Amino acid sequence: MLVPEDILVPEDRPVADGRPLTVADALRLPVLAAGEPRVVAGQARLGRPVRWVHITELTDPASFLKGGELVLTTGMPLPEEPARIRRYVGELADVGAAALVIELVRRYHRPPEALVRACRARGLPLVTLSRDVNFLEVTQVVHTLLLGHRTEALRRSRRIHEAFTALTLRGAGPEDVVRAAAELSGRTVVLEDPAHRALICVPSGGTVEEALTGWERDSRATPPGDRTAVRGPGNWLVAPVEFRGERWGRVVLLPAPGAAAFTAEHVTVLERTAMTLAVTRLAHPVPWERDAHRGVLRDITGRRHRSPGEIRVRAAALGLPVEGCRFVAVQVDPGGGAAARETAGPTAVAREDAGRAAEARLVEELATAGAPALVGEPAPGRVGVLLALRPGQPPWRATVERLARAALRFDPYTVVALGSPVDDLAEAARSFREAARAAEAVPPGSGPPAADPDRSFHELADIGLRRLLYAMREDTRVRDYAERTLGRLADHDLRHRTELLPALRHYLDAGGNKTVAARRGGLSRQTLYQRLHAVERLLGCDLDSGEQRTGLHVALMAYDVLRPG
Image 1 (spheres, helix red, strand yellow):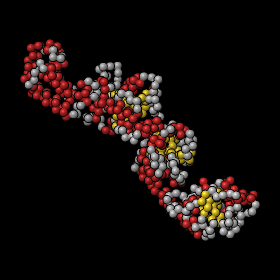
Image 2 (tube, one colour):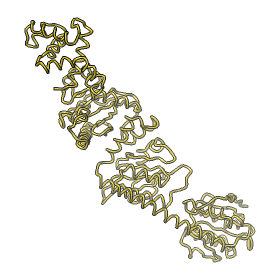
Image 3 (cartoon, helix red, strand yellow):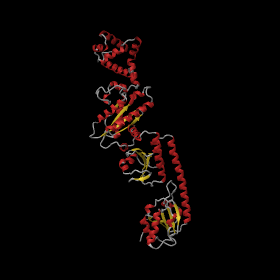
Image 4 (cartoon, helix red, strand yellow):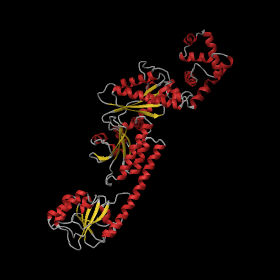
């Protein structure tokens, strides 16, 4: 004898929660729960949506159905023969009926075994009612709920369309669009490019690390399509982002563990997301890949990632090798970099344009060199490059030199600086800090490092005292020291048209050798002696003191840095 698969226990909970009304929801309604519903077949399919309720006492009810109906019957018209019962169930299953509910009050007191077997074979939920139920009341309650659901669905659909229309009108970027999709759908949303690189990921109910781990592998296993559909082994809801045959990528809604299947509302959100992204791309043709690289680099330099694992999967999802690699940062400051930003020369817009142009040039150079890297602007007008150093690849310093020469060909005032390699991507911020410190110590147009004239980039090891003072030129303590130490001498030269400051410079540069200093300054020794005595008198110092000479030399270097030319 067949036994029931399960007993449905009624629960007092609302069903108008934005989901479609399912068979399980309908059986929990008091009007049906009063009949003590018992599921005897198709327990796994109680999540089917109910589109309508149909009461029938016909032997061929399928001809009046369109799919999704909850079919109610007293069992009176059921045939006796197992073959006809199988045909009855088969027709209901073929038309897509949501479930068959039979009342065990009049003709039957337990369901026929042939009916149970047929429903189990076709996967059609079969529910029995052991108490009398008013089918008309069931119809009225369920239809009222369905109409309410449809009204709510229309209202929510209108909100979705209004939200994306507002994003389009205000020129929102792709990250804003994807974030809105995640908020409206309650699911994690990912925008990827045609090369299966995850450009933007906004998690919902999970983490970026969970969503993007193994992204390229899973994405390649998910076939492309021309319309929004659930695809691939991961059951992703996928929509293409394209315009007139040009495909820029696709946007993905990821299923949430334990959550219901995707609904029509999810499809609406995803399709509007894809449409808005296409409009965004047309209005702002900057490749999304550049924005994605820029975002990851800014999070690396600002240490804004939640965990080392998160930044690793984000970088890997953009195509950067992360396994068995070391990483090194390069900073490229076009047009003089920090020095240009301090002057009234290039405007902010011009600096940003220069940065974007340098970024494009570096991307092309890296592609030609076959060097894997992230390239972007961690700050306006400043380009950052994060190189992945793989074992066995050509010497990475040669790649940096190639980048530096390309940048200098584009703009001879560009400053290219290098950080030291790190073993962990999460520590790349340190390499970027070192590159920034080296860059800020290099005056624009100053040429190659003194230690290696054949090299076009700069490192921390190249920073001597003069460059250190240049890097600290905005520090008021340096300014005060230079002015306090040499200000009276400079004022005297200006008022009396003397040349005491140049004489002191020649003396200090000669290491205190007065003969060499006189020759370098084109002076007689007597004249040099007189000027040096005047310096001692004005400054109240002793030039025979090594410590005081060192202090004066540092002040003179700072003075030169603060008053270039």
